[in-house]
Length: 271
Image (cartoon, rainbow, N blue to C red; front, side):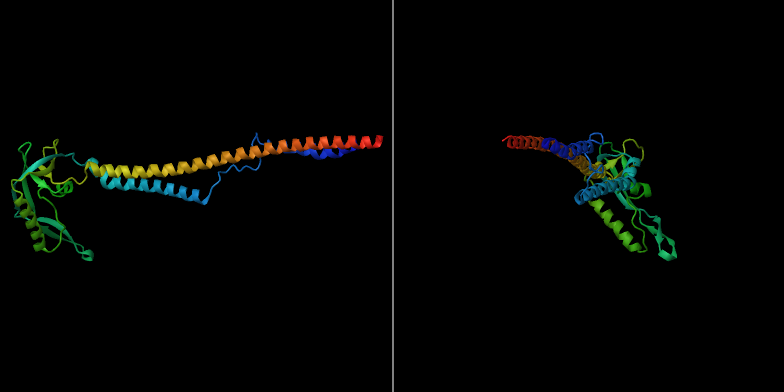
């Protein structure tokens, strides 16, 4: 009788919560309870994500700016090869070229600048051509070596042109590097290339590196958050299993203790 009463008192408190715990642990397709479906974040991860997105945005901006200012003019410009040139003759043309003077509020007025002409000889072909400073100088004025900034001081403009003429006169007969267009029949060569292969490489390499670095940072943070979520699920599941096993062990111990105590009381009653 005491054993039955103890069993009746014990059963509702132990059997029912155990089944409830088991249902609570596996109620959501085997997922442990109270597991946040949102990826956990920390201030460090938020800053890393912000840095990654900032790097990607900055790289896109660099692509846009370099594409307009450097890559597009390079693609549209005439492809030139390197050669050697020698000075044949330099002169300042008698007729000065027109340019626009900017007077701010008063508007623009017509100005003039001296036209320096440098005639060179291409050593590989023996062809005579006019030398220009770079690609822009050819597009602005194909008759002059360069186009100075237009201003009212005619003496200063003339002095600059004479200095350049003297420089080229000293190089008379000395070969120097220049660039010509093998596919064009125009008689013009340039002294320096504004957009060479190394400049194009840097314009593509650094924005690409920044874009790749930003994407890598964002990807690593997302991967870390995903692994953290998996670890949280796994650890919660293990804790749930350990709780169920612990409940069964306590139940078994209590049963053994109850049986032993009942036997002890039965013996006392017999004696």
